[in-house]
Length: 123
Image 1 (cartoon, rainbow, N blue to C red):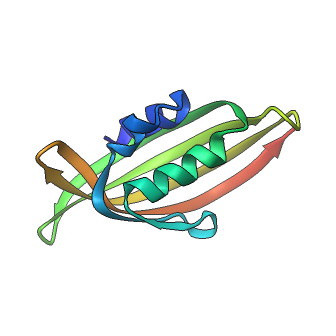
Image 2: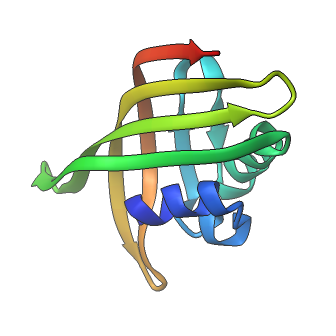
């Protein structure tokens, strides 16, 4: 589901994106916002990406482990987002710390914290 997240955003497949999250998930993206539940985070991402051109979210360095009776994952994200209206490309790099749960429909993100490492703008 970590890679499905990137595919959902980049293809604007919001039903697919929504399947990444547990029903009672909590997502903390720092200055971008905080959301509870898959509907809230999906609505935000859909709105934030509506006017963008192509995007590329690369998820790498995925480490998944069992810790204190939880499954946790850390993955790196390198995102390239094009702003068609202003002719600029935004670049953000950071990492996700996730708590994962198994549901009847497969693995889902129950809690996520995004930490920005670098953001920039290319014109």
